[in-house]
Image (cartoon, rainbow, N blue to C red):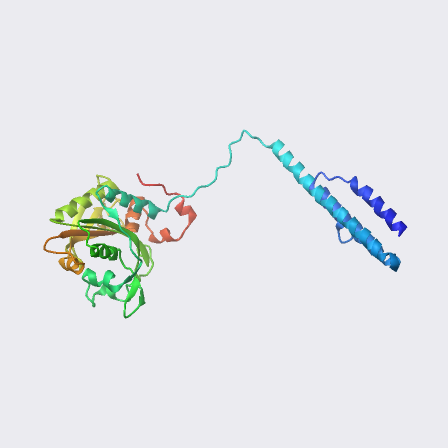
Length: 344
């Protein structure tokens, strides 16, 4: 027992004088004293040579010695890390510019949608929103779509329930119906939001996309009011050099109806794959609100008239930034997204 005490004191004195100026020296200390073949484990093995009546006292001494070595090791680690940090600071050139943090950017869809909202806000349109899960009345029936209309086909619509019908809205026209049912006239709103259609995903189509629809209901609203509103939008969105044309069309909820085209921004109207060699690109559908739609919402169609329009935000964004693949907007590729800044 006396011999063990002398060894422990000798080792303690040796360990107290130990220093480590690098990570390698700290590791060497650990291996020498605390490793699987280190001094602590070796001296612990001498317990077998201690008399039985002294084993308890010897075990306590050995545990205290082990704690002493471990504390010394932790101190060397801390001192070494501090020295390395001081050396790094001493070698640092504080005159160099700092490393700039990368910052996020708005999604191109959000940029264009906000600009569309801003343009119509200047014309007095307020924003209205509604649920993405809709019933048949607000999504179809109130909009004068008969039961056998192709838009009701399961090929086009994501149905959640049948009888009664609940579905993912196929357009934000359902928001217009909800606003008209409130009966607060005149009504001048735009309805931005995500819509869903059961379509094959490709460079030109997706199963979900974003729309901005507009509605103006008041007395003596005419098609001329609609045209001038949309002329203003196009010039603010794409510039005064863009050409515009209206083509007759058909929608169950408007009469008369039209589609509006603009000259292709990618080929300047000369013809390319995007405009299918025509020099024109369709950007929205529009028309005068059908009297039946007004009546369905409790609005006197003999007193009030109105116009409506709707556009896909992705289409406007593709034209603004000259992007040719719709799928890029939903793939979340940071390399694609970080290059966008607001369109001025």
